[in-house]
Structures are given as C-alpha cells and as structure tokens.
Length: 482
Image (cartoon, rainbow, N blue to C red; front, side, top):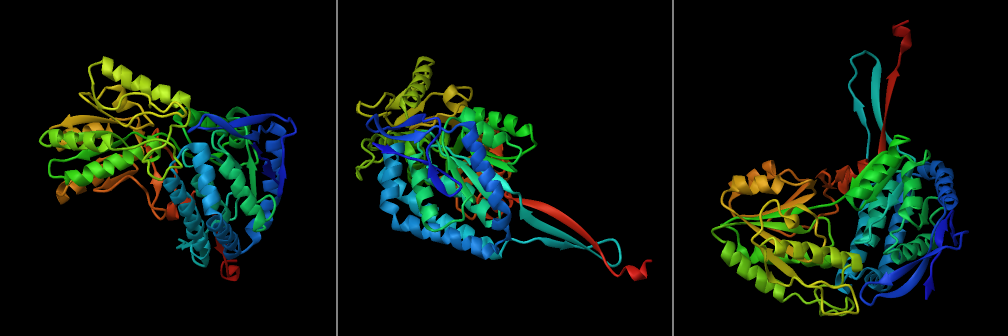
C-alpha cells in the first residue's frame, strides 16, 4: 500500500493531523493508496511558502523560468510509462489515452516555455506632448489551482505552466479521487531543482483545502476545473477578498449532423468523442441533432458503432473504454437512462450497468425518441450515453443547440460552406468543431459561455489570464513645461 506526502516549501511532508484519504482503483474497487488530508494550517503554510518565493521567482528572467518547465517536461518523458500506469490505475482511463495525456502534458510544458520571449506589453500613444504611456504585463503573485479527476495530470500543468512562466507561484490542490499522479509530478519537480515555494502541492477535502485556496487574502487568482456547483462555491469564497477566478465548469456539447454530412466520418468522430475517457470529458459530444433526411441511416450506423465499443480492464490495450470514476457515477447515469426509458425514450443499445462487477462500468448506450426538454438533453451525463434528437431545418438545430445552461464546446458536420460559416457565427459556444472530433489544441483557447465557466486556458489568451496589467504614464522633458 502506497502512502504519499504533500509537497510544501520544497519538502515532502505528512499532515500533522495524521488523517488520510483512501484512493480507489475504479477498475477493481480496491484501495491503492493513502494521501494526507491537510488541515487549514498546512494550507496556510503552503500559501506562505509561495508568497515568500514569488518575488525572487518573478525577478528571474522569463527564459530561465522556462528552462525549469523544459526540465520537468524531460523528466515526464523519461517516466512516461510509470506516469501513464499511475493515471490508469487511479482514474480508470485506458492506458493508451493515459499515455497520450502524459506526452501531451510534456509537450504543453515545452509550449508554454516558448512564451518566455514572446509575451509582451505595449506603448500607447499619448494625447500630451513629451509623454509615453506604457502598459506592462506583470505577474499577479500567488495563484492557486484546484484540479479535477478526469484529466488530472494534464490539468496540473494547464494551471502551473502559464502561472510559472509569467512569474507567479502556485499552490495546487490534487483531486482526492486521482491524486497519485500529482504526487509523482511533485517528485519530478523536486528532482529538477525547482526553487522551493514556487510550486506547492496539498491534498484534502474541498471544504477545507479548496475553500482556503479560493478565499485567502494572499491568493491573487484561483483556477478551478470541475462542476458548476463547486464553481459557485469557489466564486463565493473568492468574493470575500475580490480574488480573480478562472473557471472551467460543465459542458453539454451539441453535435449537429446535416443531411449533406459525411455520415461515416460523423459517426466515427461523435462515437469517439462520446466514449473517450468513458464519456467523462467536459468537451465531448453530449447530445446529437440529426437532420430528418439522414436520421435513420445515421442512427443505424451509430448503434452499430457503439455496439462494437469494448470495455473492461483499462490496462488491456484491446479495450476501448474503462470504468467510470466511482459507484455514484454509475448509478447517476443509470438513473438518467431509466427515467428517459420510462418517459418513452427508446434505448437502442446498452442502457445497463456493466456486467463486469469488479469495477464501475456502464454499457455504451444510444437513446432516441427524446425531445429538447428531456433530462438527457439538458443535463450533463458524463458517461458513455449518446442521446439523439431529430431536426428539420438548420434554424431549428441551432436554436436547440443554444438552448442550454452550458456553452463550452459544440460541433457540426456539413460539406456546405454557407452552413459552416453560419455555425461559426450563430452557435453560441466557446468552441465549435467542424467535421472533426471535440479535442482542443494547446495553442487555441479553451473557454466556455454561460455556466461553463469564466476565463479560459491555452494559447496566448490562456497565458494572459495569469498576467496583471500595469499602466505607467511617463512625462519627460519637464523644462519645456515649467
């Protein structure tokens, strides 16, 4: 049985309370590790450590800060197999996807390191003679990152890399469901000699650790990825000290399939988007609108594709899908499908808890005969269930797509340029994918509308989330004026 320690002020430490949290393998339901449950005092120590380290870290040239990111990336690649297996064991993600996550994380660190020589301020024209107006882009100070369980390793650096390259320090809270990979990351950061206090890692309950990281007077920004309900609590805690918040919350991504679409491609991309990480991804297709001219053909192809999706032990390279994160997730999804079935919906494949009783599995499922008000259309499923609705006109499809509390990602399948451009303009989501799967690029900007969040991540605009703007008015040659 593994026991991990938190990483505070450059050292690995246990909680003084001796309280621990069990980590469960969702494929076996067995306990695989124990992690510390931090007290408020220990979170305070981590914040104080980051505050103490921040000025010296910001004073380093950005290129030197970037070199640390590159060193961590190199260590991640050297330990890729161990890290991927750690993620799969605690989260249930199939090993091939866990390997992608690890490699993408290393690439992301290298990408953010490249911004060391690229992010910049401005010189603005003044209305006065002999004056320059400078806009400096500077570090916010101490930041905090609260991690989700679905892509736990990548989300470490999605928060840490832009924070560190811009001169901030950061305190990270690992997800209690999937913390082991974060502790392994801390070992690598320590190995490369990252100055103490620049990165601190704590673990524990959201009510204790998360609340402190969101509402502490010495925190300048909190970044959170997770549920809407928790996001509301983060905002409430942050409001007490007017802390900047960066939130990526839920998603209910619509996929519109037009009558001129390449159906085989649409089926393949939507199916892959629906079952990736067992459907536990905020940006994957959560509801499909199919034009009535092709709905019969599309549905038949999709049912066949979902029937061929295999699930089981995520370490098995032959399976397409692993378990859900826990038993609660299984029963939540099963309840949604059962309520849809009782209200008249048709389950064309799947629709039951998985037969493998060793883990938290649910069958790949397709549901039809739904309307726009159905729970499966309005509420986030976060599992391998694909609801299908029929539409007549593009206006109708766009209206239904936009009829959601969420606004993270969306997609449309068409070979008509006019339709594609209308989608770009009229679909009110942070991201729209045209004729491809729902998966963002690190140089883009991952952000949502409505209850899907505030701010965003990735690329130039994600980097700027971690920068404060300082305007300086410089009047010179005063002899001419006085």
